Length: 489
Ligand code: ADP
Image (cartoon, rainbow, N blue to C red; front, side, top):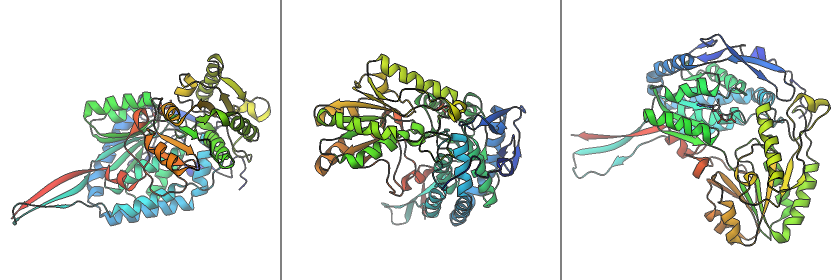
């Protein structure tokens, strides 16, 4: 599908300028201040959103707490119907949701938003959350467990894929009777606001989903610090995750966190490079490398290293880079801050002595001058201890490392603080299974990248990539707490 710059999207007709959602009302920030949300490909202002702070978060938490008792007591079957209705509206508005996300994040149009599928999956689970009856030593005593919601949940969302991540956290929370306050990222809050608007239109009662926009240290920090928030979910950087966990620790609030990665792609000697190379290229250029799952490290045996690097470099040269609406495969980075970070790593890689194979620069001239465009970049001869092999760059920068045997490949794969996901490329199923078991990561794909259409695959990390799992049937239970009830006849 070809899309024009705005795709005919009238953002002001979809969303109210300068407002976020508290209970039933679209309101400005208590301070009256706003944040400009810009298109990263052109720097045009798309809309202003409230610069929320502690007072706005408090109002939203109060609204969520007020909505909680009735929502908790709503039949799970009705909650399922309302989630299904929300899914229906998201399907109907799938192009608008996706276009809005492309406009604020800068990624190419990926087709209608997938959020409706997630909502449908969760809706199907809403009325299947059950407890157990327990064995008893007394014939006239009945023991059982029931699953209950926590109350008000806080969800802090990153800017890279805001729509899918918001739904991944919010849908299971509300399916099980919790109410939520969402804090979208300041760089890309619009898709989250539109999703909340569609939820209201679908009949989900006001106060069940609230959205407070604002900066991380202001609105974001106020959310886990609020004493009425009973559970948190966070996707973002490990550094911010640590702060959120500290705030949760002070209130003894449980949470799940997804904190990024440095995914290894282990290419064994018998790998089918015709399949592997397009997937490797896609895995690091997807969303301009700004995905926590980015396949940012290729580990290859020395005998195939030159061939692999040459072929990946050729494929990188064919990646069309530009503004998202211009039939491209890779858009800009989201912000000047992100561009400075990526360009910094391009310098660090060269200072550390890695071999720059292709890319390495900011793109300039014409449309490139309006946005934060960088070349897809390959560093070869990267050592495992280099910063470009250890740190999450969040840009289209691929590090190629070599290994001499399977044991060393595994040691390098596991030799970072992260452990979100990994890919293994081989025709030998025995080795694939052995490596899949050995890799310290929450998700391993053999001969592919990502979950490849598998439905309900749990998603989350080992080590500094976080803890807890989203997207799966089990993750819905994570939004409930277990109560034991004993009936003494
Ligand atoms: P990035 O640096 O790429 O923006 P972050 O992890 O800082 O990544 O941001 C992810 C989300 O966390 C955003 O919604 C951001 O506003 C929020 N955030 C940032 N700092 C804090 C903080 N101190 N407390 C709570 N949320 C925060």
